[in-house]
Image (cartoon, rainbow, N blue to C red; front, side, top):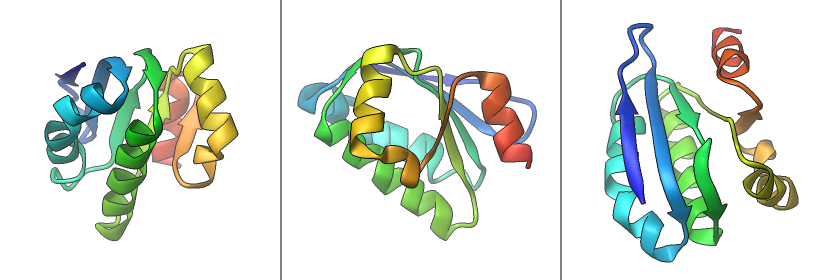
Length: 113
């Protein structure tokens, strides 16, 4: 699992995890993901187009990070999930905790509104 931090000149944090968010993959990026998203003091765009699998540990990381964002008055929006990952999001009702949209434009609009 890799984590790409994408440059963003709009005042948002923008990251792209790539690979499998199983136990090993999530452990590989957990600290860096939390630091890149929750510690920046900015709302975040999370590009999930490069994630082809997510397990409960990955869901937990997302929820923990989203809660940390909320405590600081910021938000996190996930976009671009592949169908299998989106199915896990739907089954776990993750959209009750984190905004999940289809495209980057939708994510930016959600954060702007």
